[in-house]
Amino acid sequence: MRPDNRSPKADAPVYEGAERLQKVLAAAGVGSRRACEDLIFRRRVTVDGRVAKLGDKVDPATSVIHVDGERLQVDIRLVYVAMNKPRGVVTSMADDKGRNELAEFIGNRVEQRVYHVGRLDADSEGLLLLTNDGTLAHKLMHPSYEVLKTYLAEVVGPIPRNLSKRLLAGVELEDGPVKVDSFKVVDTLGKSAQVELSLHEGRKHIVRRLMEEVGHPVTRLVRTSIGPIRLGELRTGRIRRLTNAEVAALFNAVGD
Image (cartoon, rainbow, N blue to C red; front, side):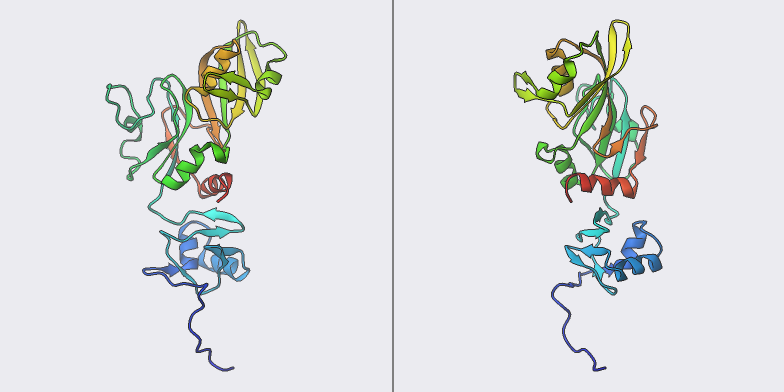
């Protein structure tokens, strides 16, 4: 076989300070280097939109890598955290009014400086995402990406049978119409009820304003999920790092 003296292909760039792809994949938790080499060999890995090859080098800080079609975050500088925000805590890292704030709960458990993705008002509780990945945070918050948020709410009852139909059809608020993607009654508690509703709206106090408008004010509000990320058994005031699979699911939710 004649030696190949051609220059490197334009579709396989070599970055400054780059590392071998299989090493980057292994460091991201995909598997052993040998397993990662097998993924590359089987054409299951893409880098910046092209099918990767054994021997490719990538820059973890800038390369967009997919494995089996799912975005993989390989930049170790980026962190993704879930928190169960307690009631009475403002969604701020530094509150100028002296109220309880997020920084008190994060402390030194996250070395990087992170920012909250969206908000929960002080009287609401539940799932809050924090990250230093500004691009992903913007997409998760932007209404055009339609990332669902699910809430469990205690409201003034009783709930009429046609309420679900009304909420699904849409309700006019002072700043425009809003409709839920799903709604169900979870339980009835005397003169109150527990309901679950999902919507992709992100306007301020949207759930509270919506339920107030239809005659069932909220007395307690807990956000239980943001896209594919669920609150689960995370205790009030606690935080946890998202898994690689959860981060990949978030990228998938915004189409990356």
